Length: 283
Image (cartoon, rainbow, N blue to C red; front, side, top):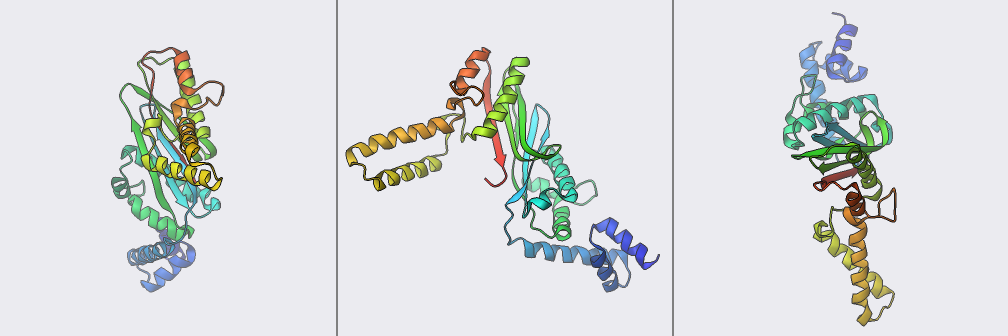
């Protein structure tokens, strides 16, 4: 086998560049197996050096069916890489595996991909090849009894790869066109309105305490008298809860109504919003 043929074979098996393959073959005296090991070690070293950098760009990928649906975030450093074919192919397969693993990140990283290597190994190789920090971010799987999942993706790059993704689970024994339409519209509403929780009492306590602190500081800076400070503060925090709870948000399609009003109008007694998730790159 000629040197060129060896380089071509090594590139096919490792995904490394021409120069790296050539150097690895020289270092291993033309032994393909040893050269592959050299590239793997160098790839890990390259990946390790890049992990200290910021990765604020990336994509959101959604995979699954109406019963079991998964969402995963994969971050990189630039939007250019987020549209790279090698990156897109990796995240699409990763998302399929994430759904199979039910968003168990430890299990996912050890799972083998179509090339026979684990997710972790492929991630290291991709970092070395592309030259950017790439990380697996937030992920979640939604699976509920008597429920159907609805999805929405915004700023779609390709197929199920986008910059923002939403999954919402509707619980009901009735599945008709009205429910399906509501499910699709609700996922779009969540994308636009970014609710923090389904109801006010479910909003994270730390988030509420932080908001209360900000409101109190704002009022103090405005020189509000102490006797009305608490009353104004209470009104502002109640408004914050209302605007950030899905059920009490203004319906984006018909802002004079609340989400809970739309559910009443559908008039299906067992229709409930079970849960939802919204992930956007950069948030």
